[in-house]
Amino acid sequence: MDIRPFALSPRQVPHHQALFSLVPLNPNAHAVIDNPLNRRFLSRFVHKNTQYVGLDIGFHIQSIARYTLATLGRSGADITVDGPSISRIQCSFEVHAENDAVMLYDRSNSQTTEVYGLGCVPFEPGRRRRVVVRPEVNHMFSMGGNEDDLVQFQLVWHRVDFNANYEVANRVETPMQARTIDNIPTAAPSRLPLIQLPVHHEPQIRYKELVTLGRGTYGTASKVIDMDSGEIMAVKCIRPPPGGFRDCDLTRLQREIEALSSCSHPNIIEYIRYQRSPKQFEIFMALKEGSIDNLIQRRVFDEHDHCVNNLLHQMLSALDYLAFYGIIHRDVKPANILYTTVGQLNYRYYLTDFGFCNSVDQARSGVGSRMYMAPELLQGKQIPQTPKADIWSLFVTLAWAVNADNYRSKNPFTADEILNAVLDAARTDRMYPFKDMAEIEPDKRASAAQMLVQHFNGVGRTAQLEQVETTTSAKDTQEDVIMGSTSPRLGWPPPGPTYPSPQTALTTGLGINAFNDGPQWRAEGPSRVPNAFGAPSHPRQPNDWSDSKRQSPQHEFPSMFPRRR
Image 1 (cartoon, rainbow, N blue to C red):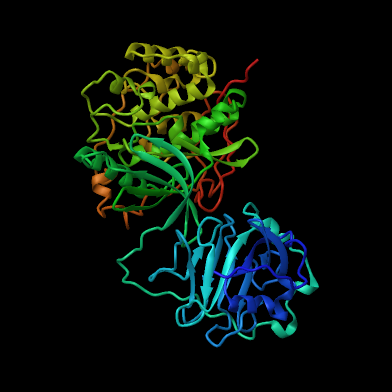
Image 2 (cartoon, one colour):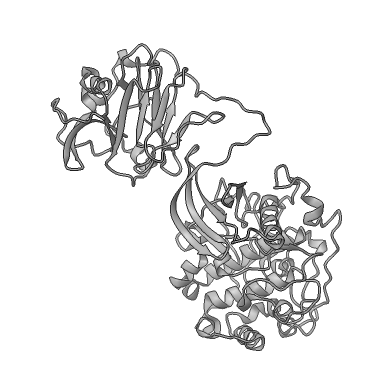
């Protein structure tokens, strides 16, 4: 490998908007450095105690496309690379507009751009000719020639933390670095080469782990980058225990995959993909900022009632959606509720981790985290479970979040101690309005739909209003309702055409083309259900519950928590 220091009157330091420099690795690459047309991009820098001259690549280059860092090629490119086997536009470096990933695109018709080096993730047949480049992977590339090695460069990074949109908006206009009129391409660059494979074959996601988010009995959760698209996502990797997976383990995995792939709700984590490698199962999901445990540690819920109010509203909406389709989550707790920030002290919440979920007609076993278990699970009652179990768990989650009756300092062990701690929390001023969620008997416990109708004017519900029994009547007092003395006995309809069970709805294995005719959010304003605490009703506007991948919601929820004096 020929990396030698030399001087060509370059800049004394890399440009402040440069992300990395291309250092020549062979004589043909040195010829690119020596080309007078490329002189304006040269800078001097020290790498591993040796001074080098390289071509700066970054936002200072006035490239044609907004998020193109630089193009390389024989004619009309930002950086000129001579040679008969070099395409007019041979390759380009692009930056992902949403997550700032830098990618190398092979734009040559002959597909003669390659990445190499230890641990590289090369271009692969059947995929678009693009791949992520980072300091720790794909830091060497070559182009041209019969062996694709005519010109060889190494990427030496100067900075990896940047905001692409800010950099693009603040490009430095440098006449010496702007393309002249003679250099403007006379034709559009060639299409990105793609080798088509049969439609039924979907290549596996190739990813690079960025950060380990958590470890558990069943494996790890990590923040990763898709090396072929530049997308940042989360992956849950489940490794088989010694002796392999048991039938119950495979059933649990299948439940999680089917539940995630079938759900489409703004407050349920977005499922991306499932795949199996020789060593593990991998479930890919959208990446969020963290779990609400982070917000609890920052005392967000202790001090800001509207944050708790939004959490309650959004999680009730998610649980009502699951109940409508006959799914019980069975492990609702702070660690399984993620969030993203959509404004100052304004968060969007997402229910995740469906490993314990089950359909209404199957659930009997007691699983989940003991402190958040509903009484019917905690006491081991052999009765069919209902979505009311999730309502109890959500109530306990709220009690933990607001530290009702110093709930977080308690360490209950027995079933009676756990239940008494929950009931003590339900008697506090902040949790008292929601005591219907903490009824011991599930048939007296409020459902998610009832709570949405009673406290949030029905905004966010999936069930039709006429299918929701109210938890109060005109003659009932507020105290009667809260204590559950007059709560109606509620029954959940069996799975069928109106309430499809997972077995009815999921007929396509891992969720590919699973039922897409889920509930449509009601565009009209909700029925005027009196707010239990006298807060003003807020008519629901169309598209309030928009696709979470495209737009963050801006809800104005009625405040449910009494003001503290």
